[in-house]
Length: 360
Image (cartoon, rainbow, N blue to C red; front, side):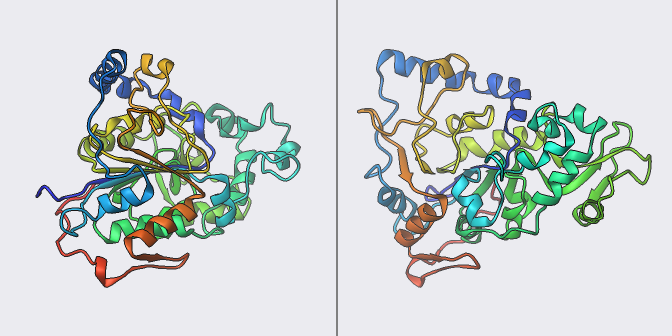
């Protein structure tokens, strides 16, 4: 690739299956040791991590960076994202925890030991009924993508998207037009289902599972009669192997990291922000600043936290808004038009170079 190639990664943090991420720390810890030591020594010795990579630490600075190299778009944006509450409302997705109206409150008739038990794999194997009742409320196809989803789709269409890392389980990224190779669905997905038996693991389609759920049948494997579960990550289960393999490929060569709607509190997903090069700008689109460095996280090996306000800040930008509003603002600066049904861009910003043969 030429020097003007721009690699972008998008991180998305969504769905409501968060703590399940805590079951796979070691691959992240071992592979981030060098980054941890570098970041720790830099902070301890008061060394600046590098010169500013944006001409201004603002959304405008990010837009100009994306249009650098004589107007040719760089290639490789990574996106990390999760539905913020405002985005869930925009998409029509019900929330979990609101007293009286949240989905958890409406599952009291099942006498759960605690609401989150419906996402515990051991509890599910003994009592699958509460989960499938909840699944009827959540099932993909009832909700619609938002402006944010279509902005990510536009990055793909323009050859800018390396990968979208999502903690959402609603498949709205796919509905908006992303394909499986564009996504790392860290908390799993409803897109496929599998028999829970270790010796069987027969795969089922989304359509098969949907028919079972809405007929109020408990899905059973046609081969062995064990339970069949959507491929979402329950508490007590490992993250998908793809999360770790793709992470090692994508982040070292990322040119821009966009983080949307996430608190960056759950590991190992939150540590992904530290895996991009020190020269990679990081844009947070969220209602509040999050992901800042702290000493405890550094000692655990999750260095490289965000720095928006200190004298040493040089690459991190916080756009404090909803995900939809932040994406609209960035799209406007780039000359793109994004709506809830399509995305277009003006001729002045048409890409004049073919995208890389392989994008992550």
